[in-house]
Length: 255
Length: 248
Picture 1 (cartoon, each protein chain N blue to C red):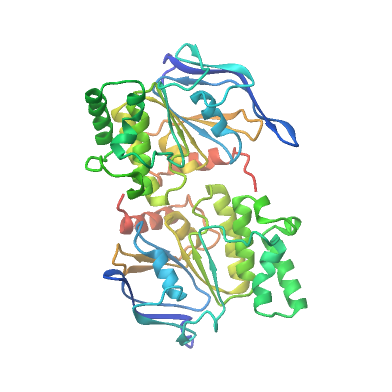
Picture 2: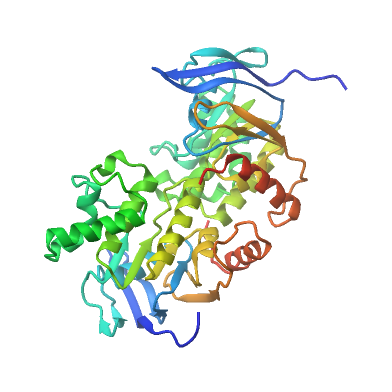
């Protein structure tokens, strides 16, 4: 990734505290300063409970910083918006809507006309490989397929940035490999800025252009790695295994 | 050397759910003290296979012998560790570990010693009076492992116990498991989706086919313990097993 790429998202001295009943204020994020470049695949990697999801939730506008600000495409984030698409670990699909209903939901809420939003939804359903399942309900789909719907739904708003919060955490190791390949393919076909949260180092090295290793609460950036391995990557390539070990050794693992 | 009688013998094991054939005529043996990993493609029926071995499911046909007699968890000491965290939420860590010993009416002194030893090996002595809701996921799996080994089972069945853990924790728990296995001489059948894990742990790797499930092959794993996941021999075996399964 060259240095002159545009910065799409910037964290400026961001703090985030939560008020815990009985314990008082608890600082989850402390003076976080990061820049996310346009169209890069950025992985946030850190131990469980370190505040990774809080960072994503602040970019999404679900949570507000206690101090500092987050700039996305030149504007301070102060609420959720369609230019920031979220894919959740638990998929959070609408169970009463079909695949098509889920994917076209965002444009529908924005008042996009039926013909146009159907055309757009179909494009992303095709992109994630779910053609033929447009009229299926989420409950009929496997975990991997449900996550494809989640990705298509986020893409359908044509966001500037895709936020993925451990989307493959519940999948078995083999389905996970499949979905990592699929996500790489989708991202290469429809370039977006991607911010991907995981606590799986193998997944981080497989997907990322750049990995930010986060420390325990209050979280901040502990280390940064550019991953220059060519794609498609190989999980058992010596350089891959070396990076996996090197980066994993930096993390503050908890019991 | 005299050939020992196998610990487990499976003859023509078949399981149908209605018309759906899930297990198709499985035949294999497991030796006493063996650490066997069982791998197969996603959805191939691995859990059905393990549940049939314990007769949680009654097989449709075939027989399973442990020590030469038909398997019966009431007669043989078989422990099971599930993928989900199965600690009893109303019991402390210590009470969880003690549970099987009490069921089996192990004398108190012996039970006390066993509980202490297990808590020590899995590093939970300090947390003995905690309840499961106060523990992390990896600690919960440690409780399950300590509980399973405390009764000194002759057969331990593990159904993907570390599937949800990150890699560093997984290796730590796998090292603990190997330590317990070497110490107790328990025969272990370990199911996993994760091929690196299978190569890290096993003496033998049984590869299953897609449904209807049958045994595709059994590979011997000759690598000495502890294993280095970056060594060429390790990677070669991992790639060999991956090629036998790969569907993704």
